[in-house]
Length: 287
Image (cartoon, helix red, strand yellow):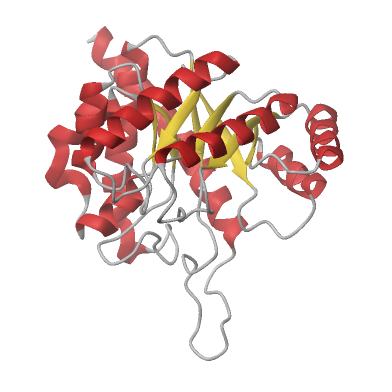
C-alpha cells in the first residue's frame, strides 16, 4: 500500500494554479477542494489538474458551510449533496469528502439520512466518504460508531482533531472505538488537535509532541485496517487551516505559523512515518 498526499485549498490565498505548483513541489498526489459553482471556473480547475497530473478529491458541505444550516431538514441536506456531487463530476473526483448532516439530529434520523446519502452516491457512481467533524452528524466517536453499526457499508473520513476537542481529551482513552471506526476509514485529515482546541499552534512544537503521537497512533490503526481490507493506496490531506483554527497574536492578529509550511511538514512527516510503519509490519511478519 502507498500513501497519497493531497493539498487542501482551505486557507490557500493564491490561485488554483499556484496551489497546484505547491502540491507538485512537495510531491503531493493531488488537491482537495470544493468544486466551483461556476462552470467556467470548474473547467479552468480541471485544466490545471490535467496540466500538472494531479488527482482531485471533491470537498462537499451539505447546507451552509462547514457549520450546517441548523434548521435545514434532512431532505434539504440531501438536495445540497446532490447539487454538489453533480457539480464535482466534470472534475472526475477520486471520491467526495462530505461534511454531512447535523449534530442535533436523533440517531434514527442520522441513520436514515446516511442510508439515503449512500444510495444517492451509488446512483451517481461516486464514492462518498463522510467526515468526522464538529457541528456535523459525526461530531463524536459514539454517534459515529452507532451509525456505522447500522450502515456497515458506509465509509468515513477520519479527522480525529474534532473528537479531541469535543471530548476534551486525546482519543487513546477511546481506543476500542477508534479501532472499530478505523475499519470504515477511507480517508484521513491529518490535523493535530489538543484537549482545548482542534489545531495545535504547530505540530512540530515539542510541547505538543504527545498530541501528535496520539494522532499518529490512530492513523496507523487506519493504515493497518486498510491493508487488511485490500487497499493499495491510502489517502491523507494535511488540513491545518485558518478561520479561528490558526493561532494568532493578540491585538495584531498576526498568525503564529504559516499554514502551508505546517501542512507540508505534516505531510512529509507522515510519508516518512508511513514508510517506517510499513517496514515494521514487514519485519514483524518476517520475524
